[in-house]
Image (tube, rainbow, N blue to C red; front, side, top):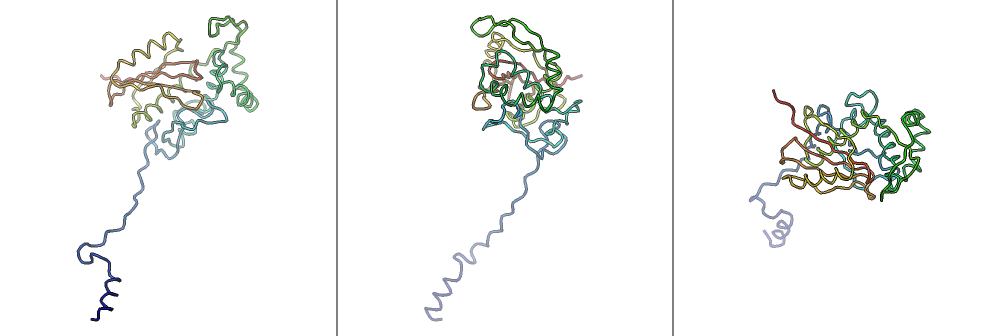
Length: 258
């Protein structure tokens, strides 16, 4: 074989031929669809905002917390409630933004100017329900200033608890990368005043596994922190604050054993 032909053949043949078999083509296997973070029964084929977008108005947070959800839970019907959960989220958003201490917060103020009036126009029943439970009282503003004739709304507790439970289950999934078992009860405290909030937060600092305060939204329209006994525990404590003024405590506890 002439040198020219030999050089041409070497150029055509891949290096290392006969030493290593050609690698098999890489096959991209589809990732398994996780179960819904809430019902844990149906595939989580959609993405659900743990704190509904309605709490933030027309400018959604850039770093929202999302979890996989089935279509039923994403549409607010997965928990078997008498109405879509989205209606309760809209109701809770409205009454919390109307709270007199919330009006100082930029997100709540924008809601009161824009989204909430539109909600009244689109859902006249929402306005009637809120007005039916409204009274006028003298309130104490920040700094101890007495503000006369402030509207006070008696919140429909069942609707508030339903929304808080949904948020707590979603946050549990997001923080721990695992769902809270369905048989683990979720209990909600009454509204926390500033003193009680600070006391619980100090207690959380002493637990083995605790998070810092996390803000959702550029303006801090919602923030939370949690504490747990250990990494695999289902016993947890959550502090949830809306519009930097209205705070609640939520507990998740292991199921009762015989």
